[in-house]
Image 1 (cartoon, rainbow, N blue to C red):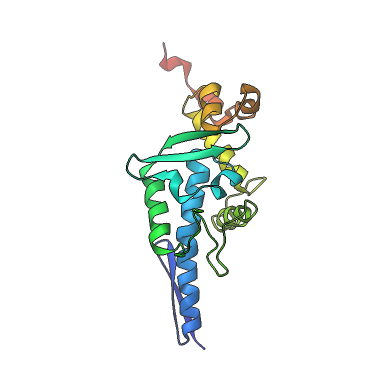
Image 2 (image 1 turned 180 degrees about the vertical axis):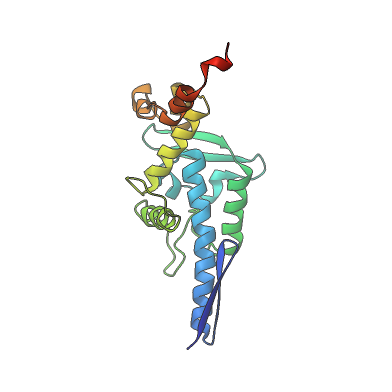
Length: 198
């Protein structure tokens, strides 16, 4: 059986003599849309795995562009503006991939039996994508994207209080791990020619 795979944009097109591989092509495209929605929630909002899998269809307010997140550690809910790119990724997943079943969980398994995701399943999604992109980091799980989100917020100049609020931390102590020295920034400062100031 001959098989030809082509990378077109962010998905794989597979041409083959058998219908089974064509279904595999759908699963790859479905996985790409599924992964993208989850990865954006982890990276943009810095959500925890448990918070992503706990999202329901009712947590996305399309009329007001708001994402409602339950914070179990704080026993409260938090609202975020729904970023356009995140909203589009979720919408593509809902329209093209999510099985049409009665569950109110936002994310369901792609293959039958369809059921809500569990937080441990997100590790595979993140680690597979990071490995495919040759991104080397000590840990390749969902928490690495939470950490990257916080590091980005530090680089943007947000205070630790603002970052802690964004991440749903109860105390500034929990946020302090992100207040590490920015070596790249320090090197730029060190390389700055003082003569330019004079």
